[in-house]
Image 1 (spheres, rainbow, N blue to C red):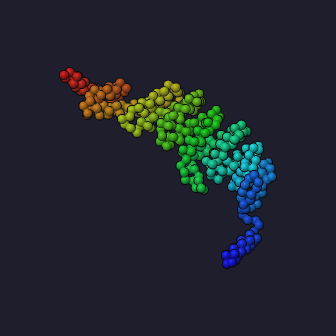
Image 2: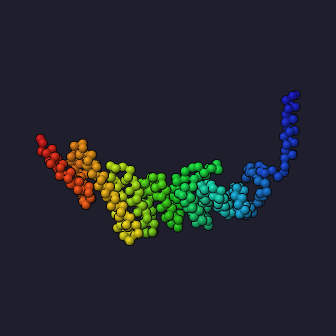
Image 3: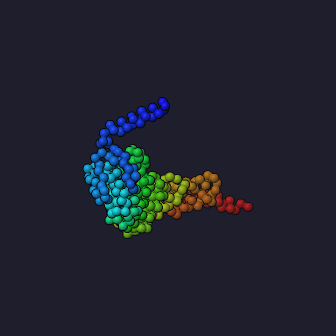
Length: 328
């Protein structure tokens, strides 16, 4: 009996609370057939057809009420997904997401528009907006999550640029996107990945002005990579080959003096590296191996100071190798 009495009191309390609640609550949970449950904000009306609902969303966006506009755009998409208005709604939602700092979500929504409507009239606009989002991430804009910008974004920059190239390989923003993939990898110090990005640009867009910059950057990335390991000559050799190729392809480029400077520096570093490898083998009494590297210095950099020292080493070690060979 006592339990029934408590239940009755609780029921009356809930009923009274419902009746005294203000009618214009800030947000109400509404259920609609075919849509499910949605929150309706105070003063935000809804349309009975896709065109009217789109106008409501666009009006909210124009007033910079971006969160309300996002809700309104999403109602168009969920309620009338096959309507022409749904395309405009996806575009509008992406724009609003970008306006409040959710750039990666905006990128995803732009991509969803292309995925659902590959022949959309908004195609070029979408590519331009995605390219701009990639630029933000490349410049250091952090990815926003739960209202806070805290996630590193260079990986996102690469993802966005790659998608732009995939979406429209012959669009006006694709070559620049491919170039900026290389820049993003360079910022991550993944120099070999940057090289591959620039090589793809040369393969896809060999006649565009950007190809000149890509060829120069290939030499630069190999140069950066070569500085990591003194005894690994492969990256230095690749850098020398890249800058030599650059000078042959673009003899009138304004980057020629810089390429020549880097080439001279690299050859000097190459000679130094080869000489030190020769010293390593000499100290371990592996004279034949040492001679190979000393001769390499003389052959590849005959005018360098390292070549002068290498010649002295060759003169010293050649008799020792001859004696060793003659010993029964």
